[in-house]
Amino acid sequence: MYMKCRKLLTGIFAIFFCLIAFAQDKKSATIGGSVKDAHTKLPLVEAVVTLSSTAFEGQKFALTDSTGMYRIANLPAGTYMIAFEMEGYEKFVQPNIALQEGMSLGVSFEMIKERKKQR
Image 1 (tube, helix red, strand yellow):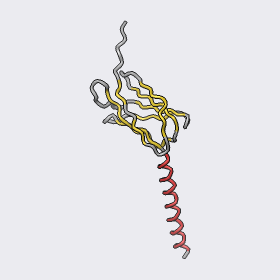
Image 2: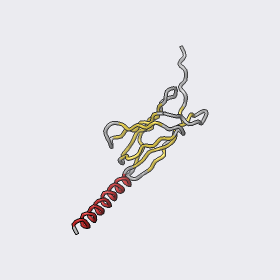
Image 3: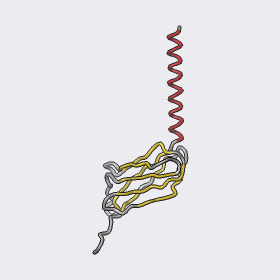
């Protein structure tokens, strides 16, 4: 009898913790998208995407993959600033991105090559 109760309680706790984890995932938000070269329209691999917000301390980073895509998940609701950077390209910063609970937002950008400095 003790073993049956123990298995039942273990099962109930497992379901309970899964439900808590699922509920937390529904509240968190995600920002993702693609980064391409503005001229060639080809994906930029390993471009740095930086998120900052007053909703959390520090910054969150992502690198684009071989298809130029990035994704940053488990974000709290808030107002964000996103920056795209890559060597040889002009940095771009987009402030005031509003993110709500459970929202999945696409932010893509086409980067412009840096102009060569003339002497």
